[in-house]
Image (cartoon, rainbow, N blue to C red; front, side, top):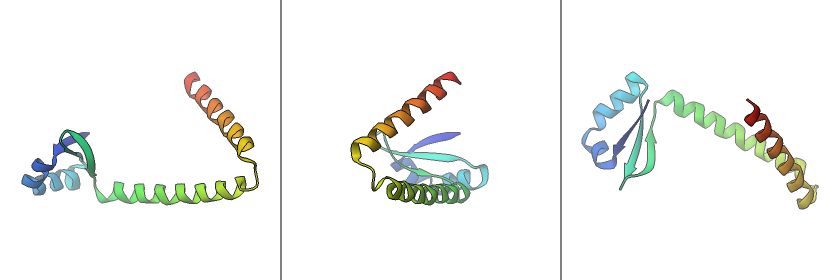
Length: 93
């Protein structure tokens, strides 16, 4: 469950919020003036996010190399079609 806490509440209750994240796998969305600015998550989730981010960067680099020789208009048309197909499949489920 994701809980919200203001930056002020975070400063006042940091120890309790860290315990909630560490021992109860809680997730804290930190807000400032009512707007989300950061999140407090356990280390295991943070490491998974880092791994996914690295994998995404590798995939983006490989795609950039593949499409490097393709004219922009052709690449955009292909991507538009891929997005359209994915959305249709998602709508069918």
